[in-house]
Length: 592
Ligand SMILES: [Zn+2]
Image 1: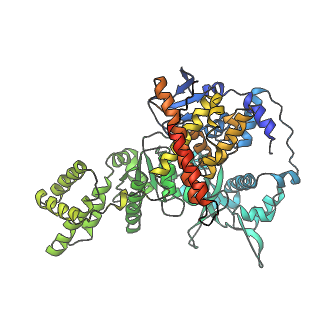
Image 2: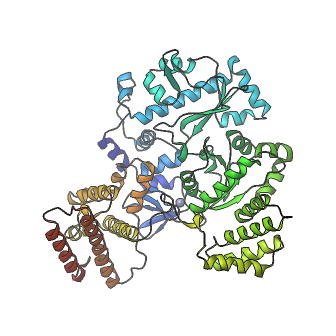
């Protein structure tokens, strides 16, 4: 059901964000805003702010932000529609009746339908596990010592050996074949027509951080191949940006998360009380997944199988964690193969002890290198020492490098001075290899002029939402065209438009950006403050500098985009430059 903008606006305006958030978070008034402990990351000081004026929340710690609707979506794991319903009920707003006819269904948001289909499939598999058909599956889970509570907690299920049981069931609920296929649950071919994708498998529903089923992993009963089959990528299932178990792990607040190989590892660990465990989804751990983990923790412990493939995965994982700016450690499970086996044999306490002693990635890597060298052969041994020296060059910080140098020298009986000489030689050769510390695109925010320009734009947008009366001054110099990319430009033009018409509502602008990452970025645009403004002069200077900064970056960008063969190129560039120079020396004050 899609609600009209008017209804959404009414629901939002009748639910004051301070009241709603105050039901979940203890808030204290500080100046114009309220502050409390952020419910979305683990913290001891209150960086979570709620602005009654903007009707927005924003966390200066983890960057979570939004309006009253997105707060509820995030906190209670609701869809947009569900959040609207809940808020409407709370404020006594009557919503138009829901139309559940097939025609109405066809008009509903595609993603929502795919989510609905996956949810119905999860219910169907869950039901089958408890029927005669599902006996084999239940037996498998029992053998793995899963309790009823665990089966229920993870919504585990069973896909029968029939070829179209699920398809028939979903059709009976009114879903079209094409959508069932698009949801990743069926395939179509000449011989079988539209038929189920999963046969004779125990089923692991994969949920996103908001507890919504977005896909499945299925483990085959018996020896058929492939052993594990996952849903394909669909509009709601991006394997590189989701993790199995994250919906629970994000609430564990252990101060770290554990990433392991498979569904059963995660489930066994959660059952044993280690609810901070997650797994990547049939693919290697990805940079996108590291970024998601970073929202919830600073430290990630890698828990991969103790075989060659697991070791390789751990080595790769270490690099990805470093790139994402996360602290990484490696869990040693020997002599057992995986966490599940370890816990069953040694128990929780022993596992906890292993977590405490998880290995620092540098020593882990050195130990793996050592295994590849024959220490009784002088050449091989020298080669090993050289590799250690090169590895040490990866530490940019001299003190940190020295500490590791001493530690590794003593551990492997190398003379520290010799090793130091080797390190210096490599460093001087320019052989400083620091691949791990070079942020790859998409991992760290871009630094440099681009970032500075955006910061100015955010400062200006925040200033305008804090003091909307400044709009008439700002608009004399700045237009939405001066903002640097589509997202910023769209937000700026919505805000300018609203301010021009006197309908100021940053909270409603947020609703135009349902994508989680965009929503967060927009919230940030309205919550970027200058810290050091105390005097009137500082305020005046900051106001001028920000406007000038936005204008200058806008000019540079527009110049770049202009075609050289544009007949007006020269005149436009010269005019732009003149305007900019004039602006540089102009007095612009927010207060006269
Ligand atoms: Zn936070």
